[in-house]
Image (tube, rainbow, N blue to C red; front, side, top):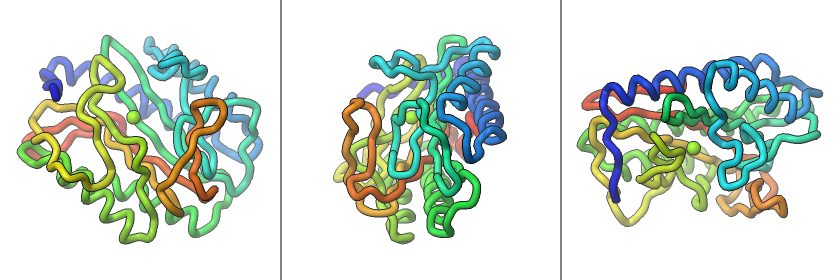
Length: 248
Ligand code: MG
């Protein structure tokens, strides 16, 4: 498995892509409310990304029809924006990828729409915190599985489950590069982390079991049991010390 090591110059370019991603999230966060259509959010993000001189990474990726992914409630990832309007009590996961100056950055967040239940708040919070538990181990000379296991442990100790069928990924000139980054323990310790690796670490957390299925649109991933799901992701640079988050 060849994992790319990025130079400081390349990382500087990725910082710029990451900044567009985080600014797009700030914009969308202010727009999310009951009644807004998911296609409105997609258009707002697309306009912003293009006005920044960048390209939405997901548009046309293996034929994906929109600029960003919007997944509501029991939808896990890869939801396609459309006519659906968000309702009070929904949770909405948004995944944004940006391509700028030859490099991608990728991040995801789950937001509350209006007033949500305490259990849904906990799902969103545990998902976000599981990322931060994972990246405590994201430094040079640790192994990738140190990150994966700590994400899984935190999620399961809170009574939720991590999705198995989709994983995080290296990122750089391509949206998806080696290594695959599971959010659960595997038999292998995984590759040793090295300074200059850039990883999209992205726990997908289900309130119920980890089983998923894919809708007839061939994209939208939903939970098998119909319970809700949350997602949290940042593009992370491995250093000898604390990792750098490019999309926060
Ligand atoms: Mg990703």
